[in-house]
Image (cartoon, rainbow, N blue to C red; front, side, top):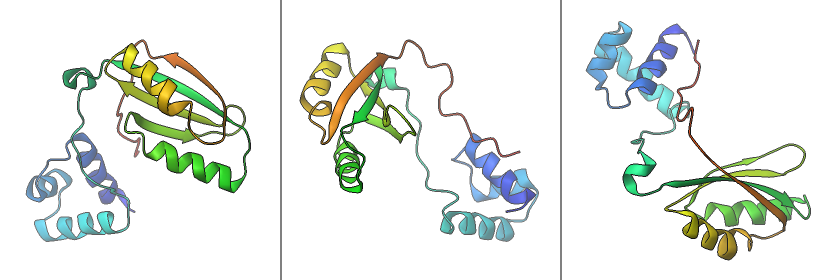
Length: 151
């Protein structure tokens, strides 16, 4: 990956809707080389996809919580079962496995507190191999969806 590839990535992080023509102009390439580089970045997995970033409150998702998960055991089977089950919960918008205690951090988003409570009681607490759940409420998103630092 060279300087031009990084410029392509930076431009796409800023505006994923750029046409290849606009992208080529911004990074100083002609259309064909820019298109080849773009396809190579997509094929190699550097660019994983394109999507719209939505404002949660604009679609009625006004409640955000961080849930810390401590597992009963850390075997491959227990971890696999937990991770497969958490993948099925749409309200978990991010899940990270951590070193140490707790074992996982889940970012959960719902319409409101009662919806979170139902999700917590019915789905999160029923996740396999969970010993303890601890949650904290998100007061304010200070940084969200920040582009990766490519320089």
